[in-house]
Every structure is written in structure tokens, then in C-alpha cells.
Length: 306
Image 1 (tube, rainbow, N blue to C red):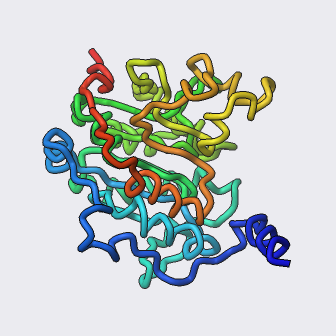
Image 2: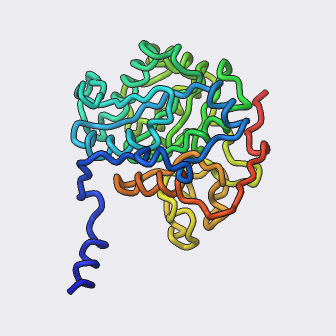
Image 3: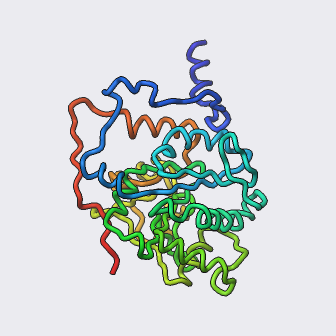
């Protein structure tokens, strides 16, 4: 009987389990064992590099998927915005003048970036768009951009070579301040940036390409990816994905599966369920082997573009 009940709980669809109470990882703030501190280099990056995060969400998912984002990685952004079709002052979420649905994602993306430019352009140096099922390690993002000039055009993410080249929307993509400036200009010219599209991330790549901005190389010095369009197990376990899976043909760089897939300083993972958001928070920021010291090196910064 006990085993049957346990199996029922283990096999329960995590997306259907609604977490209503607050999940506070700072509750043990007095227990220093559970809290990591930044080294000198990372502390300087935190003080110097301002990151605005905007999260694509909806009225139906704000309190189920947006809540874990807000209670985990989102709190490390310098500015965190939730973009929805309806305003929710209590969360809060910004209401854009758009409809919901996959066919409306490009209109929603255009409106969201326009809002960021109009209201928060001077609040950050770098701007990341993520979905409400994307997990972002903000410290690794800061480190990734630390050698780059935000006043130059940089467009970072998981580079797909199809449709002329673009960065995956689900894995999250990053604009420098200059890229946002150019993207805003493109939005105002339909000859450069169409008002309609079948895929928001594809269209972002097209609009930026018309402005002379191409996806940057974001693998680390070991050739491992930093932006992941799927959950960790899909990338880390060899054979999890069949060879005819779309990612093998979409990736700009030859796809690597198994432990060599992912950088130790990975920035994002996509398709993370609400419950797994909290698990990722624990695994990344709290769990650690006793006595083990991680030695960070300064060799994973992407090279400055000429």
C-alpha cells in the first residue's frame, strides 16, 4: 500500500501540481552553510554589469510558472519584468496590448521589447528575454558578457542556422544596449522588420540581421554550449534524443550529446517545469559536496568581437 501511494506521488504530473505557498530559499538565512558567496571577480561583475530580465508569460501561467521564476533565478536580475496580455498589479505583470496564443508571440515580443526600450533602456546594460519555463543562471550570464562592450552590437544565445540564422527563443537570448537600440529602429521599418511572423525568435534574427547584427559564438573554450533549449537530461544523457530530432539539424555548431554538451558555466535551460525550477535552485545554489572547492577560471569569456 505504501509503495503504491509513493509511486502515485512520484509519477504525478508535476505541471498539474500547483504550488500555492511561498517557497523561500532565504528562510535559512542565518545558516551560513547553505549560502554561497561570490568571489572577488564575480562580485565586481555583479556591481558593474546590470541585467534586465523580461519573462514571456500569460494570465493562465503567471501564477503557476511565473511564481517559481520570481522566487528563484528572477530575484538575481537587476530588473525583472513579466510580460503578459493582461496587467496584474499584485504580482506584478505588465499588460501588453496584444492577444494570447502561439500565433501572437511575435506581436507580443515586439510589444515587450518596445516597452523595455521606452521605459527601461537606461536601467540596464544587457537585456535577456526568457520564457516562464526557462531557468537562468544570472551569475554565469554576467561572466559571459563581462569581456564585451554593451555599447556595441551583441546578440547572444543558442545559435540556430536555419531561416537565415537566429537565437533560440526558449533558450533565452540576450541583447546588448546597442542591439536593443538597433532593434527598436528596425521595429519602426516594415522593410526591415515584418509585423507578422510564424516564429518570434526567427523574426528577431531577421530584424537584427537587417541591422547588421548576427548571433554571436557563445560556446565556452572547451566547445560546450552555454544556452540550452531543452532540460538538462535531454542534453546530458547520450541517446536521449534520436538522431533525427530537429536540434541536430538546427544547431549552428555540431551538436554534442552527453556530458560534453554543456558548459560548467551554462547560462540557461528550457522546458523547466514549475517544480523543477525549485529543484534547480537547490542544486545550483545550495547543494554542494563537503570540502570541495570549485576553481573558477577566467578562460570562458567569449572573445571581443572586432
